[in-house]
Image: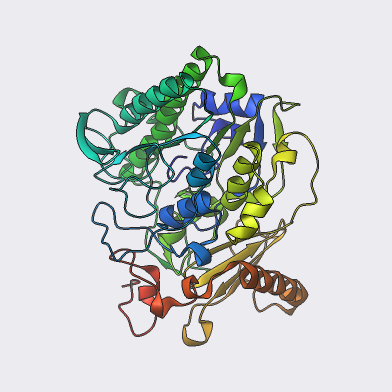
Length: 460
């Protein structure tokens, strides 16, 4: 799982300038999920949904946690059942190498035999690096992605010597900001790019949002950031080649389920914005923020090189990995109050009666998207001036016109409202729901709900 890697930014999803042969190999010999989403377009809550199978309004993390200055009162998923715990109980040797970001990163979390994570947070990616290996603080020098891959390869070698199956989570912090400091020999190649895969757009405020991170692609500094972002994808891809080569060396390639994904998407000038859901106040749910790569390779799955169009998310990935490991994913999902459903039959070339919509949230905002429509509700809308939003994606795929007040869409909106209300009624835990802004625990120095009336307004 990489960080801030938008679905659009790799060759399997159509990017013509980024070199990503490892990702392309996954797509060519596996399955590409065309409509893979995150449950919330910010790091910590998206990762918590992957590990717990729960929506943010059930696991309780609604924004990024303040690493490396996380405080004990910040929320986390400690005490909740995780993918690692379930697989360890089922006999798997388990390891985390890289970013955790789900609370108390300095502690080896339950369910993991191996724990290797940065002690300095996301932004420390080259030079002197400090990591918690299990719970011992150690110092390394070099680029973070190389250090992580070295540790991942070691885990694979140790796991191959044993009789138990293994689960390894590798969390690269590329392609997160700062978009700087990637390997210079790689960055130089991308400085010559045209970046034509990114639409030249400006943000006009049509959504009723305040811009926090605007993007002007004519700015030389922004072009350098683009080169660094493209290079970050390339650099990670090179590390994946090392991991895949080690699987091949160990004779494990055709016995191993591989999933490549990202915590959430990212905008690099799309809609005239930079970063993700928190590029605006209130939160945006623009497609580039919520769509993630999801590339699978399964032993024996045929035919290879397929694309699957059903909408899926990290909660479904949680269930699918459990199913692939031979566990009762449906029973586990019900037990932990997860909406996640295994789509393993789709990966194996079969069919499933699947939903036609995807739901996301971020604190006071909730979204439902179908193939042709997107509805966003703001809570509590009665005391804010932020408008609800509705986009007719068939007529307006770039989401430029909010037509929430058009009576022509009232029937569709009513239907989507009903689906969303039923979804949260079944899967949220009220005490942890994002709509309870006034009682949510602090996550960082700038929680999005702090912009509610009566509090400091971040739009300033």
